[in-house]
Image (cartoon, chains in turn yellow, purple):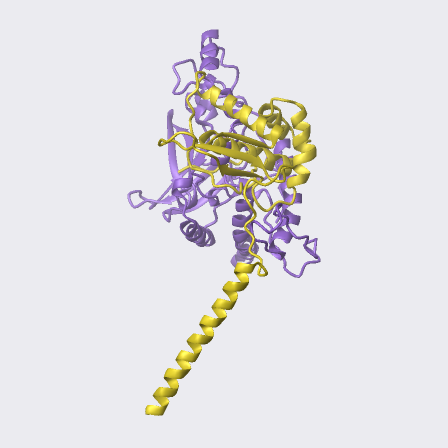
Amino acid sequence: MNQADLSKLVSALRIAVKPKPRLFSCPEGPAGRLKKLRATVTALVKYERIELNYPRAEEAQGYAERLISDAIRNGDCHKHTMEMADYWLNEKQLVHKLFKVLVPRYQNYNSSFTRLVLGPKTYPGYFAGTAILELKGNPFPALQPETHNYHYWLHNVLLEEAKKEFRSAREDRNAGTTESVTAES
Amino acid sequence: MLRRAVLQTFRQGLAQSFFKRYAVSLTETTVTHQPIETSNEAGERSVPTQKTGDESRNTVVVAPPEFRFMYPEFLPDPAMETRNRLREKLERMDMLQRRSVIEIPEFYTGSIMAVTVADANSPNKFARFVGICIQRGGSGLRAWFILRNVVDKQGVEILYEMYCPLIQKIEVLRLERRLDESLLYLRDALPEYSTFPLDMEPERRLNNSVVPINPLKVKLRPRPWLERWERQNLQGVEDLNLPQRFYDKAEKVAKPWEKYDLMLHYRKTIPAEEQEKIFAEIHSQLQQQELKRKLRRRRGPDNEQ
């Protein structure tokens, strides 16, 4: 049993975090793992929507959320946050984008800052296919259609009427049986 | 309760910004409740009508930010596989119950403490040990600390479980911190750094609001050592004066990327929102217990007279 590390205060992430990290096989070993994830996080912040393989996308999502949540919590005058932003974003103009664009955008969010959508699986097999990792609030058209149900849509109108008919028919049947029971008694 | 400023400046900055940020946002979160994903693309929180805690009708309890350093065992083990919210809540209730019976004072690694334990085999039925706290760990009811002393030229370390019912009394003779969180290197240090008189009297603190950091740099005995101290970035140890090959190997074996591994840090700690929830839960009870103890201390000598 270990005590929690108290040296840093971190915000709770609003994504599902797995207990163990994925260890990607890299020629440089564990050092190379963070290097690859750095490239992914940089690309995510730069392009705001990237398509890549699912395992890397899931790991990078965690790091991107951590980076943005630290930036929101501590701001750009915090030494440790600036060091992390400097390490994780390979292009220095993206550090400005993080603090000047993304932090105000996500300041009042109650949900996660990224979205991970499963992409096509181009070849059959036991591995997960591609995934699309995007920052919420990006300027592109939505990947998935909005799942709204408006009452004035035709099929919803017809369904409502059908439900009402069914319920009134059931009440008539119940009323009919109780009348017959009372009549018999 | 007196506010205690934590000396290390980066911690103070963190503590202040945490308190400022979360004292306000706590009122917001308690006053309004929003589903996670609303109909608009951004899950925006609605701005509450009451902004400050003073004006809101719902009073919000916020524990001081130093609580996480004073009572670290109330935070659960961060390992996700073994977490159980109900068990943690029950443990916290039991811990508060034990604390109402016995006073478990605030202490840190580097403080000199005396612990009295009920011992059936000793002539007085009690066994008292004085030592310096070299490490503390565990969470919940299994929280422990290790006291070290050198008795008759023999180094002795005893691990005490803080909530063990056999413990009769825990006194802090000198409350201070050191430059490191773990003083295991005292095992390889010269014995005078671990020797404390067994009949040591509790020292009165000059300044109650600040826990002093002792900047002592300890001298180690010549090698062989129990651990490779040159690889551990110890602040409280004098220059080790090793041949260069040791430092070269330490560099080769080091993992400098772990400093930047954000998810590794996340998995090793409890998020701030959860921490403040836990401490807000226990804050009022701990305050009440301290008040009762103060009253008892004031009344005690009067009653005896």
